[in-house]
Image (cartoon, rainbow, N blue to C red):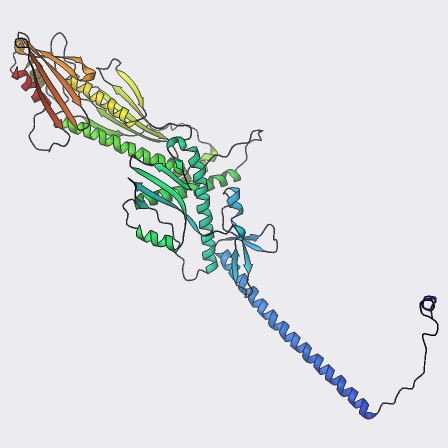
Length: 538
């Protein structure tokens, strides 16, 4: 024994005896052989069963992997980007978001493609998974909903898998959430233009009685039933047009971000260039408000000219083309590379501008009106610019700017009143300012000198307060004079005649009115005939 064993084991604790090995009989040898054969058979059977179970398990695993990868391949063949997850390199994911979106939504645009126990694929969006949502546009007129936009519904064929449908829903919902997020950012910068944000809702005015409501609502069965009830509202087309425009503009912003990211960067600067809000609401609001102002202006000019036409005065107005841009303007190589579709959308993002022009009865006198709508954060909204050339003005050529419809309407009525007053012929020490457009020389002379051609009995008309529509008249040799008061508004023209007799001192008044809605073809007295009647009436 070794010294260590001798130290640890006391003496006399181990003993050795010689024993005789018993002899094995044939029966014992046969039993041992049978037992060993049985153990071998059992071991072979157990190994075979294990191999069969492993083969079955492997077959199921191969079938599950085949099913999983076939579904992954089907998703990839549909155009979806497949990549590894940044924090789980062993897991595949699908990029259903937009790489040019803001970081918070760009990071949420990657979902894991996990495998179930049976090999089927399911999309795991993580903790950011939310029910499908969509931006809804509603048109409200006098407190009543008259138009609701319908969310886009993608129609899939029979071969589209459930997982691909879920990917589409995830992409659309993420896009709608980003859209509403960017709309809220832009709305805060458009507060000065009447855009409000209250209770997860954006509100802005289109006209005095019509406004637009923008909110984010879930897309479920209840919402689908509500949409079925609002399919036949009169302003659904307008709501749908606004909804399409803001979605197209967000896609356009993504394209611009991609072009900026892939182009040659600018020189390094200490100042970081700020990232502004996307122009999503601003173009739609500007276009709709500009159309509303233009429609009002056209209606106003139509009513005024129709009123004057009923009095026999012919005034015209027309829409002019915007001034052409300088063709010699240099275009950079970057601008040349912009696709035509993006250039078309960029033109929609610009300032809305429309020009109208018209002529007065007095010759060589005219006016031009420019309606300009700019809703950028530093702009003032809609502005009306009027250029006027008229011989009766203190300055022959004036330019006026207005910010409201009422001020523009008041100025237009002033111009037409001034032209009417100076269009009435008068004689005396001064010559007539001008004659009515289209009238013959003989007719003008007959009007100036009287219908009977007697100059001694002709009435002299003198504008006293032309800006107020007042004209005085006197006849040589007579003991009375007359005063005319011209009052013009959008729907009627009123001529008030006041005559004063020097003998009795009594004032006699007679009023003549022409309306805008007078029936065409119905005989009515013109302004010139009324003046002749006043002259002849004494």
